[in-house]
Image 1 (cartoon, one colour):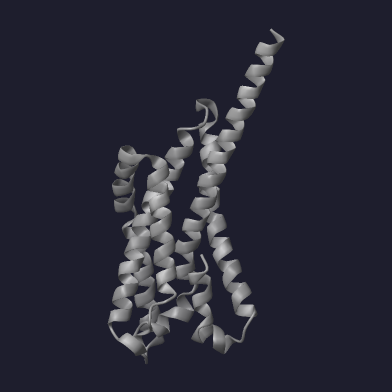
Image 2 (cartoon, helix red, strand yellow):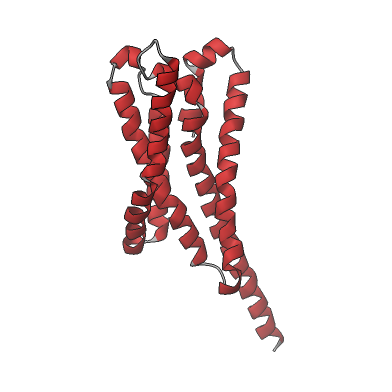
Length: 203
């Protein structure tokens, strides 16, 4: 009887550990995804003049923010597509695919030549990458919540899945913190010239 009780306690402990491992992995992944998604917008005033024709800063910023908004527009399509992928090959693999797409897309922004180098191709590439980011986030965010929900007890499902929502805000704060750190480690001229690329490629 004593051995039976010890076994049950051990199984409960292992189960809780597994649950928190799932929550931690999903939450960290979601935070990284939102970091990648939000850092695009956090750098708007720095990047926008570099990827559009010179002479009209306000128009460049408006065009850049429109590109930023595209990421939100395509999110539902990413949720539909990667939700199906998750059903077919598993949530974990779909989760990893979306992380890879988001990470590579963000890093690519850090390597795109500016408008002065490649002309109209610069904002077009930026738009395509932003679409990929939106699709990846749409798939990852819903997938992470479902993945957690599938591994937790019914009675605490709302509590455990709430951690996914919290990490979205943390991703925004992290993006701002990284930008401020990099910006304060160099001159304003250097940051505007090339330093803005660092928070993008080091994801």
